[in-house]
Image 1: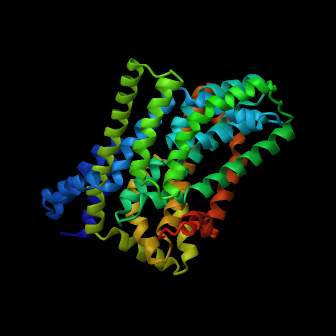
Image 2 (image 1 turned 45 degrees about the vertical axis):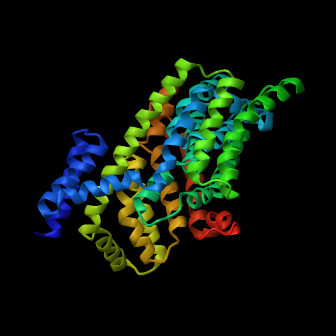
Image 3 (image 1 turned 135 degrees about the vertical axis):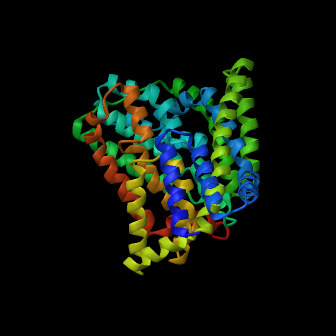
Length: 433
């Protein structure tokens, strides 16, 4: 049995099933079964890999973070975060745009999802910005690009995808800690870009509020922000594991939204749990089948073949990294970020290790690079969501995205060139990286 034919069966069946619009979990699983059938791999081995993928300790934190995020979203935390950010920086030129960037950073520490950020925060900030006098393309660009902060600011679902797909015993807590400084850097860079454009185009200054109103806003929002601190400080200080932090934060979010904010009713809680269950079921199916797919990749030695191909171009690690980033950016224009992390990590991770890259630094680079695909046509889900909210065609807003694309790529270059930005937090706390 030819490995080349095996590789052809694996990828061609996956592509055909995706074109036929099969769910990605089914496409990964069926492609793995077809390949296993040809190669004579016992189906028991594939099913065993699927079971191992969703029963690993690393994966245990996912349900808690999903429930926590859904409770905080349905409990009205996004409104309070927006008001809090407005108190901090709203009284400058283009203040609403800066608020947009800052609240996305806060919300990223809750939802861990770009599309959730755009759908919730963007649903009222984009129309609000347009009504205040901001151009539609600018409003959408600020909202969508800042939403990508959530893919690297913990708790990030995409970081968990990377850890699970890498399958090398990496720590999710350490991976989370690697995202804080890059997330802050991206937030500041987008705020600077937003401010420069706002000053140049003379966008409005937000209305001020009284001291009494500001105190009430801060008091209400702080309780919600504690949820983020439970995750961030708890993991960084070593008080909790990622799984424990997720569980405690979910319980805390339930208590605050139910008994303090009083925005969570029994009926709403049931709806929230059902939404969480649907999300969790989707993620579990993807991780399970991707484990079987990764097993087929390893069996066919695809990572080794890719490494040899890159080395045939150049043995320079910088060139190899550049080639992998270009591949990720191009594929990101046509495929969803989560899918690409599941597909590319088993291939690129061994290649990156063979060139001597740090596994956590490389994971951050992968997540940040593929996050750009959320903003680029034709598939960019966050881009589509932002345009749908504003009810404008994509082609009319791309020009407004250009400064933000350049800013995003600039931050990516800085992260690649200076690994210490990614590794500083875990190293300073004595974690093994």
